[in-house]
Amino acid sequence: MRTSSTIRTGRTVKRTTRAAATLAVAALTLSLTACGGDDDNGGGDSGDKGGGTKAPASSVTLPKLDGESLEVAAVWTGTEQKNFKQVLTEFEKRTGAKVTFVPAQDPIINFLGSKIAGGSPPDVAMLPQPGAIKQAVDKGWAKPLGAEATKELGENYSQGWQDIGKVGGKQYGVYYKAANKSLIWYNAQVFENAGAAEPKTWDELLDTAQMVYDSGVAPFSVGGADGWTLTDWFENVYLSQAGPEKYDQLAQHQIKWTDPSVKEALTTLAEIWGKKDFVAGGASGALQTEFPASVTQTFTGGDQPKAGMVYEGDFVQVNIGETKAKVGTDAKVFPFPAVGDTAPVVSGGDAAVVFKDSKAAQALATWLASPDAAAIQAKLGGFLSPNKSVDASVYPNEVQKKIADALIAAGDDFRFDMSDQAPQAFGGTPGKGEWKTLQDFLKNPKDVAGAQAKLEADAAAAYGS
Image (cartoon, rainbow, N blue to C red; front, side):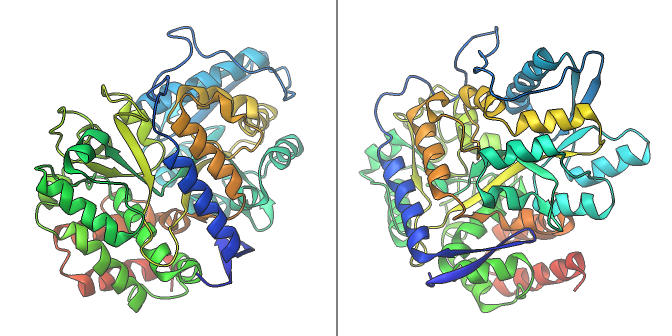
């Protein structure tokens, strides 16, 4: 990594140093390697069963909204949606408002467009991409945050997390949820049977994968039916191998996808995706496996699961919680290994954006910027908050506490998910753009040049260049 680099998160520019990056990665590595042993929770449920989670002591001032009704749209499903609804329930208790959760579909910008065209936009929407926030602003849909929400955000978030939610210098987004997308989870029993240890470099990862394979288990489970998992694989390899400056340039399409650095990253990915029997079910099986199943099949089946490892973020714990595996003992985690000089630190997140500039909508944005709101969902597991005022003790197990501590300790030194920074037509649409091309590449990892050409054609169309 170079001594200094320019980080562009959305439309914002900030500076960082190699020393800071090294410290952040070191903090993450030390945190995760300390996470074995006895956890009281597996990362799924915690706290009250059926009675909801006890709210933290109040620290945010909210207006009385008796008789007001709001709609909140998000693509979240299952446990994630259920847990978020508990946060909305507490907002209702504190304000008297009635909040309805509206299930959205990907791409959420298209979903919102149809709602707006029909005259029924949600009051607030949770947008998973900075690119989507910019599109919503450019279309005149999104409303700037009010003074109270902006104040709460300023008190509880680092400048970097505030800046990601800005467009044209104005604050539009509250990054309520974050993700550490530089983690590989593994079945501890499989590793023990194979005599494998946690790798720190890409070459060591390949050696570990071979040991797992030789023990009779496919090394990797890949949720290829969801194209976003494949973009995350690529981003970690690319950031570590090409470096932060190239990463920022590619994220803004300032260099083309036909650049040699992209060829190198795809060729590296093919060392796993193209290795016979390294991916559970092969390419065809992976392309029929959705993300949740990619996790659960790694931690079910006793000492003969379908795979020994699965790559994805901290939120994997929600899915592990659906198995009998216990996070920290049966299911362990290590940082994504260094492909180049430094291990990657890639983050993602979901931002609350106001679509109706009302007192109630602004109050909900203020609530979601508070540590009170984040602590409720953090306690339930499978959730990571960039809110620096959240006490790490609320997280349900030591693994999640350490991941949260590392995220906050990193401050502004992170790279946001590249595909989430792109126009949604390229980086966030099922069956199109980067998602589709990387699915095709998983199927035929020998065609590096073809994948690059298709990625560049789709990027050029989406970016208008």
